[in-house]
Image 1 (cartoon, rainbow, N blue to C red):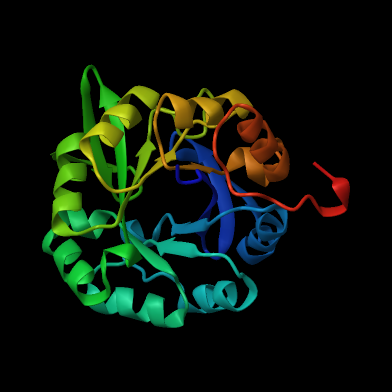
Image 2 (cartoon, helix red, strand yellow):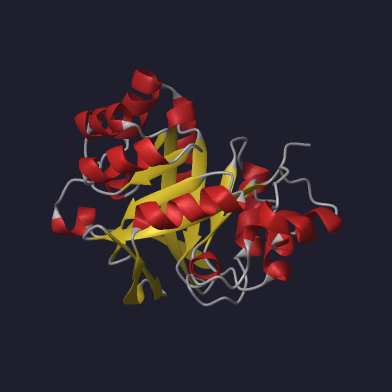
Length: 259
């Protein structure tokens, strides 16, 4: 069994890490590179950096920040936000990103997924999907959760896989920042319908939420922000608890015997 991944997410606005609830109520957290370095020391498996206003404001993801991250961080990281065409992705990968994440631009132009997969390979491409459940339907949103589109979660995830993306990063807008657990029912369905890795996002609040997202949601990786940013769940302690629950995780060196 492949080890499950723990992935801190750093939402970036104007070069600063921020966090909100249900995609609103944004507050500043700190310098993204300093936070990332802390997560490396704690044993995070990967990192995700998302410029949450880049698509909405028509800006490009800041290349200088990507270069800083690549220089100071020695674990894989994904960068997303403001990637509108093939050349944007090239600049980010050349700046040092291990993977790039596309969201709004891919919804508007699905052929972008094909172009990126053919140009760099599926292993470099993550399709991020923000979706909100209303009644029985999961509707896809773009521009940082501001604009609903006609696509639905499951059909769009399958199309993204068919077009060549290497991973799906699904964020439940209903669960984002609430600390009430992940959207495990939707995640388990995605896991059954897809053959590529699935990253769960939105709702982590306690250790049991992580256990559930791997056992019930069948996710390959769990992404979280608040519980890591504010020190509520230390990553070494989380991994120890997951291992005790029978979930395969990568080993972490506990520095100075701290958990």
